[in-house]
Length: 88
Image (cartoon, rainbow, N blue to C red; front, side):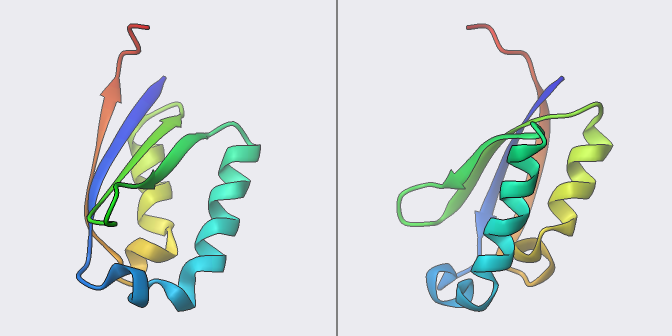
């Protein structure tokens, strides 16, 4: 099942994320290699984050997101995950 993530970044996200960026990207790459992460990235200006996950449950995706260093360090300030029905 696919899930959509929508969230917000903290103020000064580009500067604040710097010490955590490599760990964040390495974790995302592992999820992508496993087929769990389809895509993820910021909006222009890094005010919001958007992602698509392939997982068995909403709880699984929420656990992955809350385990991300950006969440744990307050770079992402709010995240919402929704089940998604891909029409096309």
